Length: 183
Image (cartoon, rainbow, N blue to C red; front, top):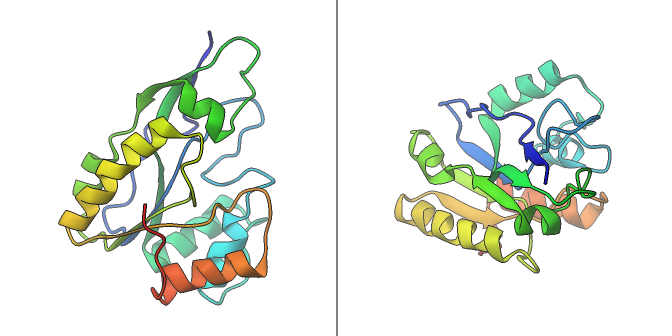
């Protein structure tokens, strides 16, 4: 079975991070994006800047995205570090497959503790349907954040499609902080 590592295995969020957006897995496979949420069918870089009233950054180079991140004190992490997929599923990067074959998790609680300015953590999954292992990792993280006074909410995934209702949920949750989907 092939072991697939995270595309950015040693990535650490900036210590000045105030908003951490947590995803599931960015696999190091041929054609993988150079940064978080860079797949063609992922719209985070469209949604997130728009939530702040800015133009989308989806097709912009990484340095422009990093400028946005620095200005708004936003950074990224994934919960999965490596997966051990059965032969034939090497290109499978969907959460259902990753959840079933996790070899190593990222220690997100330690990561959170290393971010002294962290005010909010947003997990980009609306539900845990068919993701029992991811849920088992996220629930203690959510509790840890609550104990530390860090806002923890789920966001509708930026993957697959863009919609005005998804954008509104991101605005309301991240910027206005008037809604919060709890795990």
